[in-house]
Image 1 (tube, rainbow, N blue to C red):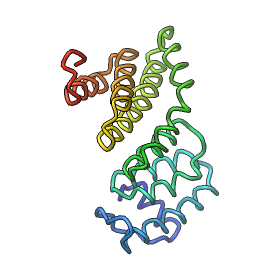
Image 2 (tube, rainbow, N blue to C red):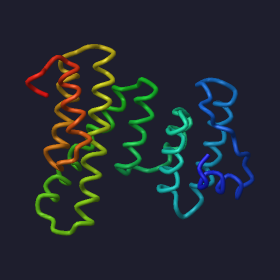
Image 3 (spheres, helix red, strand yellow):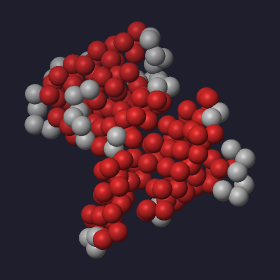
Image 4 (tube, one colour):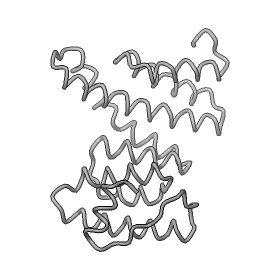
Length: 193
């Protein structure tokens, strides 16, 4: 576990659970989920609820504890960062329609960030706006891509590519641009790549 999580668990007398990719439903996974519930309750009583719960959710996703991550993120508030992490965990659990719906409701915030990015001269603000755009649309594109790989629907692959391209066009970030081109090639659209 990350130093942050270990220190927080030890501070509150909770067991540090070894998280070596415990299979979903296994005893270790159940224990991790229970620890995440306890940790969420502790964080609710602290002053840094949302950032701490989002960090905990991110960590649990990194160690493939997706149910535990969703449990930790339940009380993380309604920030765009919390929804990004929820969508990642949902996607890993093959619950792509829920992940897509969660991030599609964030489109007005992404659109506002794109508009503000066009007019800001503050480089630190531009970095924040770029992160909102790239992360949200990149994760959304990834959920559409995963759904397409399961259902092979043209509408899903078009939505995935469109989200990646939108992020690239708005920010120039290479990550979504590469994903758009690679997915277009994978889908057989050489011209769109």
